[in-house]
Length: 212
Length: 212
Image 1 (tube, helix red, strand yellow):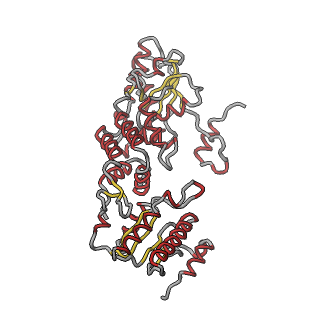
Image 2 (image 1 turned 180 degrees about the vertical axis):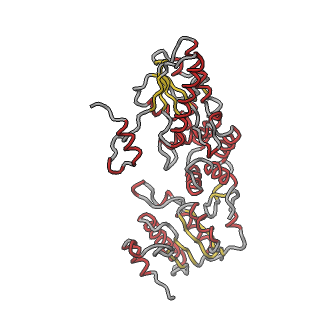
Image 3 (image 1 turned 90 degrees about the vertical axis):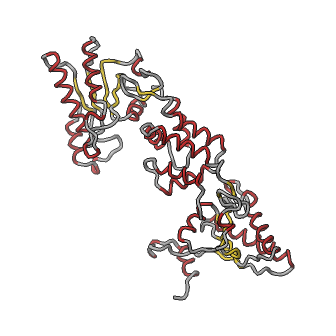
């Protein structure tokens, strides 16, 4: 039996997406055959203009509609605090509760030697430059929260950034910078069970204990 | 924070697909931001032409490139055997091993009163007509294999079709038709464990035992 080219093409496009295997790709394609053409056109249109109608903010590297993005130009946000994250989706997750009032810096990745991603492949230099420039302009940054993921690569990235920031800011003006570098809290997530937590999480939770 | 309209649109389109929730839709969308524009255009194009470049075969109701489809016009297939399935994907599954040499009839659904799908919403009447017409033209159909899913709705659909076929063929020429109506074999799937099989499967497996 010959499967129509139009179906094969769409199955192949779906298969390239992460987490979608051949079976799911087939199911999605055959599902879409029952959907009105206007819906398909809308979907196609969204795909075509996804990149054309978005832009990277040249300050924080978030994906946005304008450059600089709305967080970077907002006067309600504290410019002296920077939160460094791996991905744009991390910003969305942190923005959901609306408690954090500082600004962001999106790295668009993590240092990952196994996948040939070194410090120059992600926006680390841009972060260093941004901090230096802010200090030079008198809008000193007081705190940098390293919020990369608590994974092997995320920790390595945080450590690398921390070292780079310390050396670059201290060497520039001959004295230690006043930028406080912090790491996002690690410990037990809400709803977790002590019994099933792994050793490192428990160790970090003990280290990160706070007065009650 | 304002999420760009271009991103929101695509997230919404993905969310409408079965089995893709808000989180997956977001992840897929942000993944596609890192994909070259040519790939996006190809994906968009596949979506747009999915329905435009396919057609329902007017004989078996399979989704195909031509009407009638390649199975219906093939001279290597046995026109006297018809396999009735619920969905086009079922035809693809049955064609994979290439053992079945008869033709198909795709119902595009099953009788499902809870979802307001009665016998007239799926291609049952077309099946009856097809069998009658074949008999009238002298290309008599000798066997109809009911291969709807062994679920509550699939069994009900098979039973309804069987009754309809028997009454329509017997009433037409005043005598019982010679069309053999069979149901696809039910029992233990290969690799299964007797211990964990449910009662009805075991009952069907006993009923369907064959000489060894």
